[in-house]
Length: 129
Image (tube, rainbow, N blue to C red; front, side, top):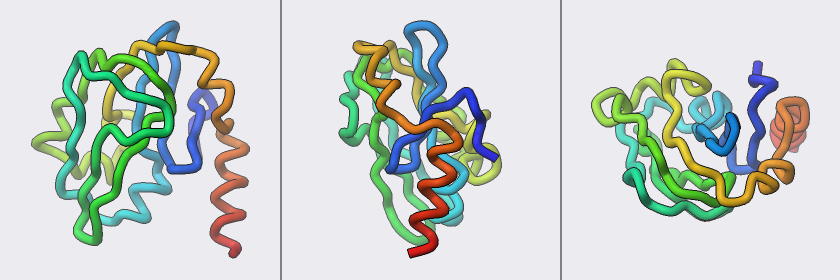
C-alpha cells in the first residue's frame, strides 16, 4: 500500500529521494484521517525547511493540520496544482499530490526515517491502542 521507494515520518509525511532532491508529501493514512481537504498552505521556492519543523498546513473540513519536513534543505519546487485542487491530496497522495521538492542539506537525515514496512507497522501499532 505504501510505496517501497519512499521513507516515512511518524507525523505521516513521505519523502522520495532522487540524487540530492527529495520530493515530500503526506501519506494516504494522513489524508484518510484528515477527511476532505479544502486548502493547502505551502512555502515558496527558495524557502528553507528544517527536519522535524513545520513548513505548511493542510486544511480539511475537520481541522487544520501542520505538515512537518522529514529533512533539512531548500525548497526547489512547489506543487502549484494543489492551490486550485487541494482535493488531489485525497485522491492521489503518493503521486500527483506531492507537496514540495527540496535540495537536501544532509542526505544522511533520510536514513533516520522509516521504511514502508516500518511505517505500516507503526500505523497498525497506533491503531491498536
